[in-house]
Structure formats: C-alpha cells, structure tokens
Image (cartoon, rainbow, N blue to C red; front, side):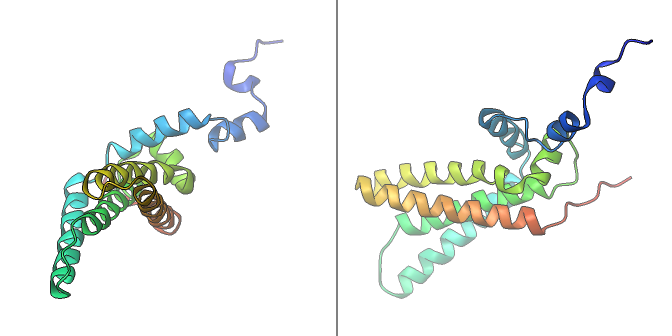
Length: 162
C-alpha cells in the first residue's frame, strides 16, 4: 500500500471547501482582497473620481450652493467602486483574483470599508460633526459595496491575450 500524498489525502469536502474560499478567516479574506485591490486600475479610478466630484461641484454651483464635502464623498464612491470593479474584471489571473471573482460580495467589503474610512475622515475634517460624519461614511461605504459587488456578480472578466 502506498503512502497517500498531501493532495490525495484530502477528502472531496475539504477540497471543495478550500477551493471555494470557505476555509478562509475574515482576516485572510481581507488580506486576499487587499492583494486583489492593489492591482486596481488606479488611473481610471482617479479619473472617474475627479469627473464625478467635478460634475457634482458644477451642479451645486448652478444651484448657488457651495458644497465641498458631498462632492468629494461622491467622488470617493466613484473612485473606490471603479477601482474595485476594475480589479475584479482585469485579465491577469492569480489565486487571489480567482477567489475574489468567485466571491464578489466578500471582496466588495474591502473597497466599501476603504471608502467609508476615507469619507469619515473627510467629513470630520470638513464638517466636524461625529454622528453626521458616521452616517455619511456608512451610506457611502454601502453604496461602494453595492456597486462593486454588483459589477463583480454580473460582469465578465477580460480574457488574457495569448
């Protein structure tokens, strides 16, 4: 009788669990999400954030309303949503990216949390109110989470060129 190798000793349940990402702790999921998010299309995300924030500033100016915090927060949502969605849809393949593509809603928690943190800090500095800043950060983070998860669920990753 031969000695079983590491891969052959694993049961089907264990293989399915590790391949689907169910064996990851929340900390591991954040680390994997961070690895995928680090490969985001930052120039495109920055352009989207600037365009959305600029358009919102213009709309506020047309209504004779001076607002800085809300356009910047909306630009942060666009920035993080485009970065997260772009990271999910890129052509380069890695184990972390495959996990994120199989679990788009778990991955979306990372850009959502990042957006909420940035919007909270921005709101505290500009507006100064703790509870209003917390509410603003939560709903902007939720919007980023929803947009990123939706694109990850519906979108198809680009194919790598051969």
